[in-house]
Amino acid sequence: MTEASRRAAPPAAPVTGGSSGIGRAIALRLHQAGFPVYATARRLDRITDLAAAGLGTLELDVTDESSARAAVDRVVRDHGSVGFLVNNAGFGLAGTIEETAQH
Image (tube, rainbow, N blue to C red; front, side, top):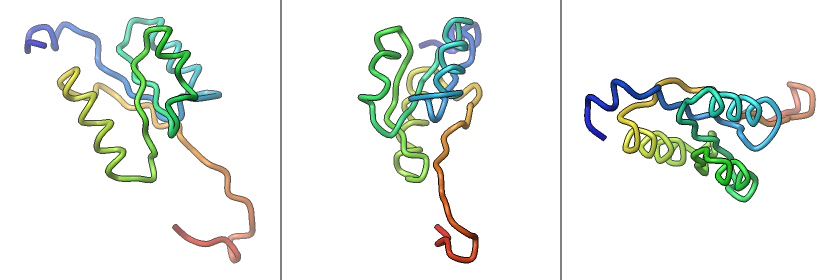
């Protein structure tokens, strides 16, 4: 992609937590609005339908720095930069704060 085409193109948007819920809905809406979207999930098999719909998909575990770096590198390689990030990934942790391990 040339510098001129990068400037003319809408910004690329990785969306963490794209396999369900709000992340999935945001990824689809941004795609419908014409943004180059990368829906991400820890398991690519959870977002194959998004790839079939034309969204970019990336395997990403937000708790793993090398996984995050690889995802960013891919978006930068394809689009020159990350335009904006929708950081939606999360996980549940049950227990009292005193009894829950810190990671």
